[in-house]
Length: 173
Image (tube, rainbow, N blue to C red; front, side, top):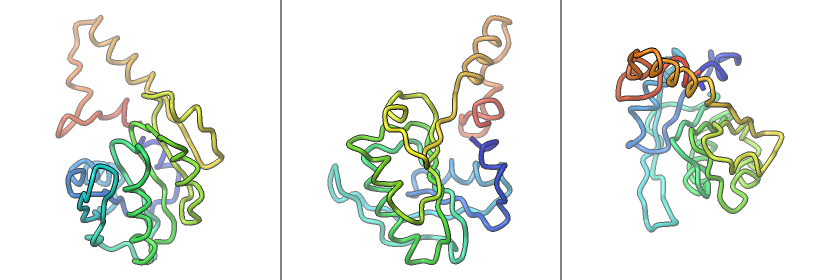
């Protein structure tokens, strides 16, 4: 995923985690891009409702990459977008590994004018069922192929993973 974002001018970009629980992953991603990190302070009110009370970090006048592990209904991201806008974010690119995208989430997120792009991997077929001009689906096939090659050759698969067990080079790119 990092390779995808490196093609953009990232000089004014900050990576934002939607919540503090994902902040370590977002920080590692931000480091791989050479960018700062910020996070939303999220409180879950119910199974379907969240509230973000603050953005920790500076997004004023910045282009934002929101990084999350999955997007289901998009409710948390929509709540985060309100705070990013009110804190002066310029544009937002949403990135997730697993695009569940239930109940038309892609269309709801893409309808937000501040959203420039939604990026996910093809670990689930759901994103492919909701095509949109703002949606980019990245293939995990190269990472899986590399893992299989390593297994077949008796090499370490764990070497594909960096700090915290997050996929590195092949999978992240």
